[in-house]
Amino acid sequence: MLAPLDQSGKESVQVTVVGVVANLALSLLKGVVGFISLSSALIADAIHSLSDLLSDAVTLWAIYISRKPIDNSHPYGHGKFEAVGTFFISLMLILAGFGIATHSINQLNEPVVPGILAVWIAAFSIVSKELLYRYASYVGHKHQSRILLANAWHHRTDAISSLVALAGIVGAVLGYPLLDPIAAIVVSGWIIKTGLAIGYESLMELTDKGVEQDILKSINEVLTEIKGVEHFHKVRARRMGPYMLVDLHIEVAQTISVSVSHQIAERVRFSIVNQIPSVNEVLVHVDAENHPEENPVKLMRPQKEIEAEIQVIVNTFQEIEALTHVLCHYLNETLTVEIGIAVDPIRQIIEAKEIASQLKLKIELVDDIQTADIHLEI
Image 1 (tube, rainbow, N blue to C red):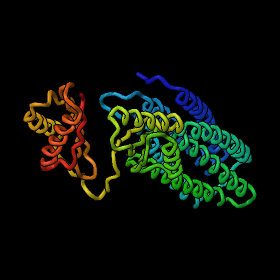
Image 2: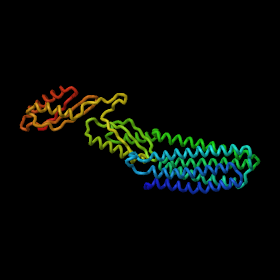
Image 3: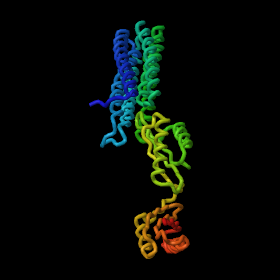
Image 4: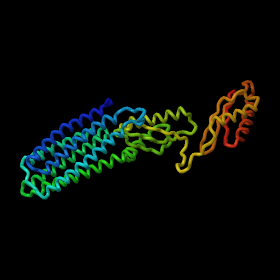
């Protein structure tokens, strides 16, 4: 079952379908005319257009697959299928280039003069493919789609190959028949070069290469405007086809509550997604301090154990009616605790303060507690 498409998906399919129709017509037209007029360059150009048709099919497949929603088997989405499709397009380009080169080299021994009709068909192909390139490139940049941009360059290489083919055909007609197969060989070299470049980019995406510096700069600019974010670091991003995943660390005030920290983290996430359209997911790690990356975090006793030990100490004070709360702050590799105690409301304040002072002294005797801050609830 095909995934429902959003607006970017619909526009991507539309431009690809236009390419399918154009490539089918051009490959048939150039192939027939190249065969009739005996032009190796035009036949090579027809094969290139046919490879474009195959790349259009891969592009359509990748567009639908990459936009499928998250499921159990792909919790990060299907975006990388677009990079897979792009890689297959690069392989098609490379194979087509080698095939054209082999055929053209064989034609060097028996060059022929093509008919004049081949000139007009090559010229028509140049105009058609350049228009297709501009259309696909516009939509690809608009929606940050690597596979559409790769397919656009496939159109551009066909336009350039048609230009080279035209030069070779004209040269052969003017009395230099070797120029036709030579032009075809030049076309094949350009095709192979383009295929290698596109394949490299798709492999970099599949291996989680980082995104461009200007995108990271945009993320940093968004972070500097968010209230509650004192510092940020470890800002990273990677592509998932038409989408982008970001993860980062923010530092917040050391003693705010978990719920306040969560609000700040959500504000960070919403701000980045809303201001940078290509980002669809942001993972925010909240830090209470800037810990050096080269030093491992010192693990201390969990809060439940601290609470239990403090409760034992509080139970030795008959004057304390209840331990109301315990907050642990693990900062600078030390432990500070905030403790709330309830005492008899008829006690004088000076007596309650003395009880709190004695409790503070006892709690600070515990090995891993640096400081105890006692709050009286009278």
